[in-house]
Image (cartoon, rainbow, N blue to C red; front, side):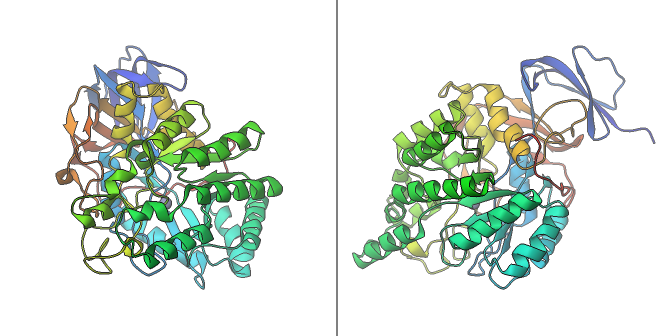
Length: 469
Ligand SMILES: [Zn+2]
């Protein structure tokens, strides 16, 4: 049978160095030709006049169907999480395989593969969370898994059952260096948080708004400084996850200016929301915006946008971590929990790209459309080894393409939600852009918000440490 062909005509296409009007010919799963006025008798022709044609989003930080240390599973399956991802213009995601003390890392990775293989609608690779760094895990299992295409590790400096000590962090950084893997870090000072939590609860400060005070910015500053030093000592590049504050950003700016080679991301919520949202009239509503690190003040968001403009921050992810707004999720400890009893995390896979692109199209930032592609698709693909297959519109790359309608007025609402959270933290945001069609490896997976993909059609992408970073 001849390969299936698709011709996308007259769209404004994001190439690696410029935007211009071009046609794209897709043969099978791959981009075969990009030129003006391609004439080809394709099986399907899409007229993308007045539309933006961008590479599919790569959301490199999202928690899907993940088991927490307490056993509570977040409120998504791979099906619902990647459904949200696809509707929001993403064609690849990097969720987590979460290992806890006593677990075999190999078994954990196998289990998450089974879940993803059954449910995923978009392509995926995986970060391996190591929270139980035994000698067997680090010396035997980890090198084997890295060789098999799992080149990304995640570690925590806080959370009781997740954090590991400096000795283990250094061992993992050394092992990553030896075997060629990236290490991402949740960097906050654990004792500063614990100390604040105790102080607040002792003073009967229970309201969700105190979550913000319980994670002092200084905890981010301290942990960033220490993990950057550990990265320098081991000469192992790291990714600092979810930078939330102006002061945290300064630490990164200074270290990068000194020439230290590492990466840092921020997330949609730190750029576009602020801590006032935690102080709602209906007290429990504030739970919707509890995530860690917490969303902070307007001036922090302004600083983070400038960090993206100056290339100090490398990418924007969602840190999608949904807990449903009911007794199965946010209120699993009862209807009137104190801030510490509410699971940390909010949904974002569906909202990241439209919210960020809209901000740029509205000229609220100095970033360009090409910058948008860089921070939400190309750079994450490069950092985690998905590039050049993913993260660009180029001949030979996977035909992962999103056609964006930029003349669309959308009011974001709870009724749009397809992930397991049952609420939209960006409710009442107005955006002027929305994915008209989402194409994964040449196949349309979403058209006008209708899901066209079959459950389980997303594929695992084995990765190796990237040569592009
Ligand atoms: Zn996260």
